Length: 151
Image (cartoon, rainbow, N blue to C red; front, side, top):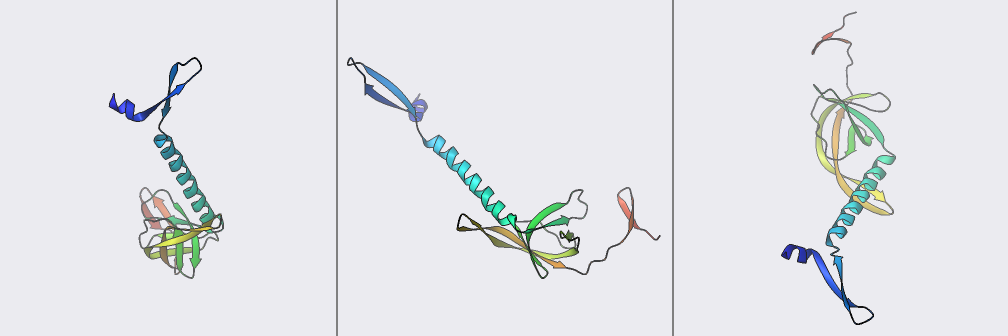
């Protein structure tokens, strides 16, 4: 019963005729928290979208993984700075939007900046060091194994 009392405030108001009527109002705490959470989620989506808007998309291929992963960021020489903390392992391959391939050498955490409505925000990012000395080979897939194609 005490829980209900904590969750609802009772306000007594006089109405015509001298009778008292009790009006119940829910505390704003729950709805304020929901609204704040929604607003924060919307802001985070805007920040990420603003960062990714004018940047290049790269595709990362991992050994023994069926699906590739898209990364969005900026390539400066052989350093690729991308949005978010990424799980990156050496020797995997990244291909840019122009179909140029790179081997991954290493990675480290950093921060990236995004501007939304005149405000600058910093969020986690990853710097991936690349090697452009990539050798493409033709293979024949046999089950779970690959063999060099000699034809």
